[in-house]
Length: 354
Image (cartoon, rainbow, N blue to C red; front, side, top):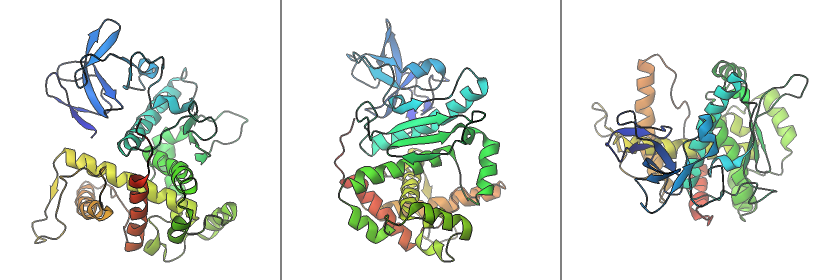
């Protein structure tokens, strides 16, 4: 979970923390154990209080740039952590504006990689698989060059640095008529395209996937052109989790994949806080106890049965503060069937855990 306890003083600490606010102990994230640990210095190395005391660690090189708190086990000769090894290009961080935006991108990317680790998904990078490994390029706009587009191409995920500008991202959200647009949402959506390649196309699931999401052999460029010119079909809410998901089967899969990660990760945080939902006036309806690990195998209905009451409660709290709904989407039976496909796709695959 992304809520942890400092092993030195017991203070609650968060996924992104690099030190404990209470006792000032240095903190570092152990990716294999997926836990944040208090550290004790040992010469040029660190001992993690949450791991074997015989083991030694050092920080990712990006920790010195304020962009990472993940640890590398010694005697590995890697300089970058498991998450940062996926970076193929970052912006010119000598520019203060680029540095602060890159920090935002890294926080979102590290949260994504945490989820992929918890789910045990294959995580080959470009050093492991030069042709198809998962890689990220974070690109700033350079004068007299083509516009940077966020997207996916054969394992390479490009994210425009401008997406880390809150005002620009909101402008794009409104221009595109989107209910939701966040950095983490971009990462989760684009990595869905990557795992379509890995788990569906290369995993022998094409026929089953096509029966549910549609035929991916439909001309992609023409489908997007039609979507942007004509919009989503009138009944899209019955079959798709978002309007954009109706554009093409690939986008339907990527959008549903992203929402699966939204649901699992948010339920995990709710469970970390021991949340229970039981509206006093509902007489048992919309009740849920977040007392299970949503990353574990099982039936997707358990996730849905906990998610709907949680979303109802949190959306209501947001409205009480004059804020938009946290989750402005509807999970129809058709969407739940697609979530179920992704749930089993994830848990039935045999990708090695790093």
